[in-house]
Amino acid sequence: MKILGVSAHYHDATAALVVDGVPVASVQEERLSRRKNDAAFPLAAIEWCLDHAGIEPDDLDAVVFYERPMLKFERILTCALRAFPHSWRSFPHAMKNSLSEKLWVRGIISSHLGVPRKKILFTEHHRSHAAAAFFTAPVRDAAILTTDGVGEWAALTVGRGTRGPDRTAITLSREIRFPHSLGMLYSTFTAYLGFAVNEGEYKVMGLASYGRPTMADAVRKVVKRTADGAFRLDLDYFDFHTTAKRSFSTKFVELFGPPRDPFDPIDLETAEGRRFADCAASVQLVLEDILVDTARALHRETGLPNLCLGGGVALNGVANLRILAESGFDCVFVPPAPGDAGCALGAALYADRIHFGNPDRNVPDHPYWGPSVEAGALARLAQEDDQPAEELDDPDLIERVAQDLAEGRIVGWMDGALELGPRALGHRSILAAPHTIQMRDRLNRDIKHREQFRPFAPVVPIEAADRYFELPPGGKRLARFMSGVFPVRPEWREKLAAVTHVDGTARVQTLERDMAPRLYALLEAYGRLSGIPVLLNTSFNLSGEPIVNRVVEGYLTFRRCGIDVLVAGQTRVTKRMSRK
Image (cartoon, rainbow, N blue to C red; front, top):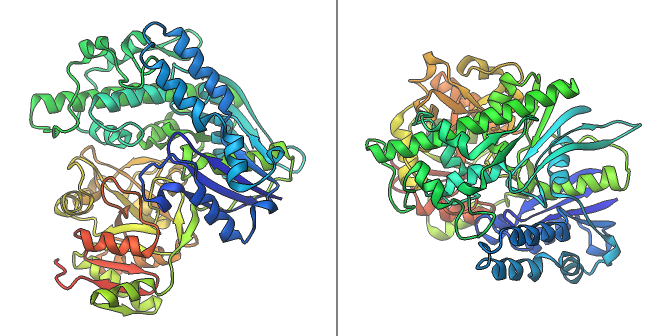
């Protein structure tokens, strides 16, 4: 059975193809269109998935959209009417936005692909999140917690999943509905702090480490706990449910002070900069507390040892570690794409296992579902551009690149199939030595072109991880896809300064040899040279751009910034004026 999953029309539009119960391809539209967070109907991604599998649209048994547009329209219309007359200005825009292509998804899919309308199915948004988290985890039974901004109505769900020859099911037993949303709470503070919503939440988490949660009581005024263990937002402090123009209200500003202008730098040496850092620390703490309490209650209810997390809030690695440490679960599983990008795969898997009732199948435990590096492409580009290039066998290439890294060079690394999700996990990465603050600052300033307070992540062989990082039981699994933030052992913080955040932590990636063999070999080679088999690993892109996909994109990025060496496949290219 061939099932195509599609997510679109909000952010991170994606296509995913499942054949006979196993994923064979998935790619985000932004990686092909080169428009960051591209929300458009992912026609290019669909075409690539079908071409990669060698099938035609007529061969598809089903096309599954990741949410129910009519139910979502019901929520938008209901919320607009409830907020009247405050919503009268935004109502025409909301209706125009919804009544365009977002509502007529079945017709759009049918017209683009030519598939019969009866083959087009829909899942609920949070069921797609739950399926992406549970069906890709190597467990048979697990509790499930999904939380994001909003799907149709649900903003948080809890339940459990079961896989096996006799019964495969996902049961979501309870939900918290919009506008009471942890995702919207965090996004509101993201906007207040001057960052882009659905993109800058990472910045809030990074900034939080520089502050103290002095405003936590104020945050608890805007998100209040309820007697049944849930929460509700005090909507007097928010505007996101009445208008698309602003997330927070005048009352919010009266409580927290003037918002940050997005164009103003954050100077942590000033009282204003520290106020913003304290605000970030406060909302981070309150978010963590609510998530831990929710997970702890779910553990008591289910008695299960495993928890699967889905939804965009599951990208908060600091909260994930607290859930692992304090909720009672032995292991927490987060997929590499827990947000909307992963919903395309989740929708396809949900349709296969639940709608069609097909037998359960194990899903390969890696994130590499996109286009592969084109053989010989980098050599041709370098030759046309008169850049020094060499073709090397794997052992020589690995040793040469390890030497580059040991000598302080920054390496663009392209290998194999593109990752799914927001994080580069060793196939489209920028790699560097992790030892000095100067390397961190150089990367932020000359390559990533981003705020100086942003941290970088380390990648380490899984067997060596405990030596350098404090990983609790279950931590190595959480770190598989960079889903947790862990303390760096105090004795190693100075020698891992480029990847140690101001609070002594790092968002670790633990790497098994089978997942990315060439990167694993590079870590071993670098360890032999430096004595520390750890590298700084950050996504191969510049600020405001998607992660690179094709070799030509990696090459153009290499030429436009301070990367010294580019590796794609067996080819190594250096700049003529490579600096140490």
